[in-house]
Image (cartoon, rainbow over all chains, first blue to last red; front, side):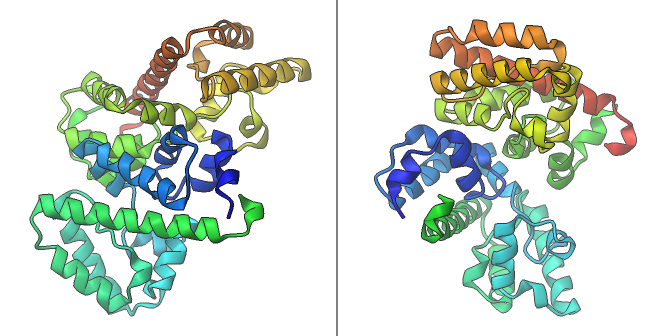
Length: 173
Length: 173
């Protein structure tokens, strides 16, 4: 992929391609466009991360709240974004037993009640058992630490999505 | 409308109802939820405005870049958000002549090239002639002043959308 191609995009094209690097936050891609030209993919990735880091805490919580539950209602109803759909499928979350699904729903609800945002995890790097045990573990984190952990996952998801986009058919870019 | 009802919403319901108060920026509603309880509609409105004001300039430009063109391709293709669709229709932008549409498209392109974000206007308060003359006028503003003007329009649009939502059937809330 040619970073020159990215640097030549107008903001409409840029947001159309990179608008969901951070789940349901096209505002962030639209802001990152202000920082062009980018020297390479890492530079582009760093700009997304820096924008998130510079948000006030309410904004960082807002980013997390734009994420769907893992194995939640949106996966059931088919209303996930294309990226989330692929990631949750890759983690095998579409083929849970009814019991596993109930258990995750319970843990997700406890997590949301405790922290005020949904449990976010770079799911495609895990399998269903790892998702559940990670959720159980993080449920007991101190809130300030958990906010940092969750934002780290958002950044990992974003980096993987960027890599997908830049590996993709250059004609799309 | 009962503000108590708003204050009792979990973040999922809140974002589902208020997620497009700022066009295509559910992140902002999701962040504003952190500020609850709200004393009344004005308080809620002020929280949206304060979040926008606290963003770095790139973030404020990002908010603007999430807005569609007035009388642009998305209106033609029917891919506007429901709120934008209603507002552009109220301004009569759906029934322009081919000449008027071409003229606006030209002005929109000039504006985007000059400022790096689309022309944003609380359209439902205007008619097509007023939209065009306002666009011609603002095209010559100094960039820093134009950023402030455009963000003022975003806030006006948000205030009107909030008022619609809070006047709406309380059963929706």
